[in-house]
Length: 381
Image (cartoon, rainbow, N blue to C red):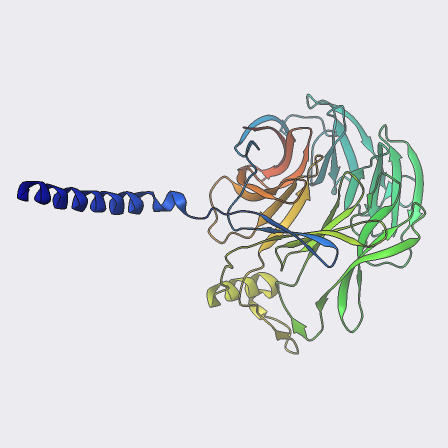
């Protein structure tokens, strides 16, 4: 009996220790996983995303990228050379359209990179530009060019035939007009008053205002903030506007009537703006002389969380977050699906200019200082 009791004591002790050790070893696997929370607040669907990706089961989240074309190499003809590429687009056939600001033209290349034609030229007449800043291949399969210097947007066919000009009136710095499937035009402009602000407006096809989508103050002189909120926007495949500012990791989806349908919010770890960062930024902005003597610089505590974002043709949102620790040969992007769920963080070769039909288009500088438009194949696994 005594031996049996001793065995039982030893056995229970071993069982207790085993359970304790196993529970300790497997505790990390039992931790509550990051997840996306979707709520309805005041009639708005709000998607709350965690710091880390939380993809839905079965959704591919690993991205493979391979370069398959480079435009702007030496030895090309003068008309096909890219002097200052600024905006890149692609049509459904895979033809590539590049706004060359220095040449004051849109240059068109076939899917193999062969030069096809140039659209527009410097001037003030129909089909001519003064300082084009942006263009879009519209859902109607035309080209919409924004030229703030001439205070108009111009419509061309894909073949380069001038169709019409639309006046932007007295709007200042009207930089990036985009057309929705129903013909509405959305664009942002700057209002300089006692408080400078960026206004994002939806217009009808005749550039008559329908609604103000957003109004974002960014300056009240003499107070200067080098990291003022910059507004970015895109149009969803349905024609809704998605917009956000660099100072918040939050995006708003707004319909034609100006109603906010959805908000996409992500948690993040803010990057502290140190005194060294301030000194470097001040030198970049104002040189050795520093800010104007009558100005008051107001530094934020943290860097803005967002650099910019784009939308691909599926409605996936690619957000370039601010990352202080830069990595060689890559740019980080947070990827959200069409519902606004954070599914992946990926590294792209350079800033994304366009993502369409499984292709990534970038503008990159080589060792000799020449700019190239590059195309990459994107494969999700």
